[in-house]
Amino acid sequence: MGWTMVISYQGRGWVVGAITAGCLLMADLLTYLHYRDPSYFEQHGWPKLAGFWTAALMVQIFVRSNEGDETLDRAKPTASREPSKPHRDVLFGISIAYWPLLLLALGVAYYYLP
Image (cartoon, rainbow, N blue to C red):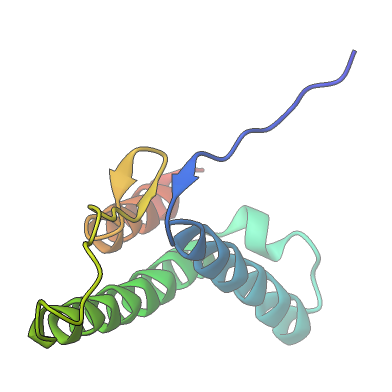
């Protein structure tokens, strides 16, 4: 019997996961290419810190760009605008607005983990 992994997201919340996974994979690849040691990423905390913090920056940019889209939608006249339903972008039940801070904290936590 196998196991199933479920990633809970709503709206564009999946982008946070994709950015984070991409940044961590890039950090792993770059440390491997520089040190030529396949276990360097696993044995040291700073590459994970750099990957999480880079992801936090990219997610913050993504969140800010989404805020701009919403203000443009509100600026349209109400007669030409369709009724809008509340749209929340979440990953694992957490709004994407909070993910940059969470990623910064995860980076610090993984830096100090053995």
